Amino acid sequence: MSTISFAGQHETPVLNVEGLSLSYRLANGWRRVVQNLSLTLHSGEVVALVGESGSGKTTTAQAVIGLLPDNGRIDAGSIRLNGTEITHWSGRRLDAIRGKVMSLVPQDPGTSLNPVRTIGAQVGEILKLHGMRDRRERQERVLELLTRVGLSEPALRVHQYPHELSGGMKQRVLIAIAVALRPALIIADEPTSALDVTVQRRILDLLDELRQETGTGVLLVTHDLGVAADRADHIIVLQGGMVQEQGPARSLLASPQSAYARQLLGDAPSLRPAQPRSAPSLAPALLTVEGLRQQFNIGGRPFLAVDDVSFSIAAGTTHALVGESGSGKTTTARCVVGLQRPTAGEIEIGGTNLSDLSGEALRRFRRDVQLVYQNPFASLDPRQTIGEIVGEPLRNFERVSKGERIERVEGMLEQVGLPADSIGRTARALSGGQRQRVAIARALILQPRVLVLDEAVSALDVTVQAQILRLLEELQGQFGLTYLFVTHDLAVVRQIAHSVTVMQAGRAVESGAVLDVFAHPQAAYTRDLLAAIPGRGLAPAASFSTLYKRAAE
Image (tube, rainbow, N blue to C red; front, side):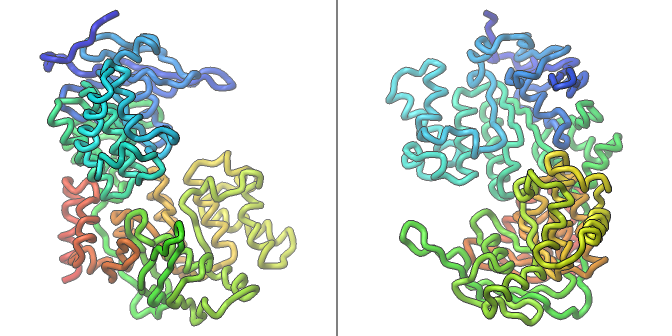
């Protein structure tokens, strides 16, 4: 068996991939998903693979670490780790170096940890597998690792289970496992895409610190050019399995040569030049929330999820509720659409107080306030056709003939930019962006006055996200819609919203016009959120705060 050494080999690349081509076996034969990809990664460097879902970036990462699915294969090319050819090593042979010489930080911290084993046992397992037999020594090293990755109260965490930790905490545990044996290479596959922006920044800062301390090379897989702009030394842009462009991060992003790289750069909300939206002049408030409180009983104890929150939305404008997970923004949105009755406070829409409504009156009211969920696939019935999904609200609220219903559904699908033949297809046959268009069409079919969008673009690639945001802006201009937009991403807020309320731990810490809040944030928490927007090192992102200040003046 070849021995891989990385001590004193700084001139030899940590990772060298040449002419890599990969395929998946499908029902109708083999399909090429990566074509002739080459990259070089040196000690202490970060190389970013950037592209949309289906571009081949995760498949490439899986091939490097030897974890291609059973229906995947390497058709051609070479993978060298510290100068040693590992392209066709068996899984058993690769097991000897996984964790020790190369490690993986996976995308979803919620599904990557064993739910029935403690955190301490899972971190300790990698140490035991690679020769640390002394139990006390392992326990000390586990505590050291959890402390190093910034996990609070590590002595407590070793005895806890994954469900007792937040998403950011779980991702820190995965990083602790990945760096436990000081590997030469860390493959970080969308390591922060499921996290709030401030947690994302802390995790990426942590990876940077560890990389600088140990000289580890990082292969960063991401769809977010803002993240790549902040963290990568070298960027490789993939589309459809083909390299569209690659080069030093700063020069590539300053002057992209390929049309696709320019599109990604233009669509990334954190990298777009700031263009403050002006609200319609003196529009009256359509939706008013006053002194909202929502209390739950958890384990026999009261928990105040929303505490004295107030804001109003002018007709035909977009108001954003911004905050991290647990800030109370989704609970507030659910109260607004009548899915929860608040403990205290008032919600008034178009002169109607929700607390005065019940039974049929409340049901009829809901046609005026519609909700679009975060996950378009989970919110669409997989057994129904798109026509049935979009037309279902008409069945519930209006007595119209089948012919009229089909006609209105076809018209609405056209309005949201879906092809006519999608009416007979199911959600499974559509892309993520198309599914979200279906969810928007379903919400609009009853011609509501208010649309509540709960993280409606956070699960989408940046180019698809940009398409949906443009669609929402067009629909608002066409129908005079009023939006309550729930998100954790201030980069999206600055693109779509007229006004904003920043929430933290159930309270509104700041509220006002986006122009004012972005130019002159008063709350420390708001300043933290603004500072966490990725891509701030590039000219477009760096100039947005200046532009807001100038506009505010």
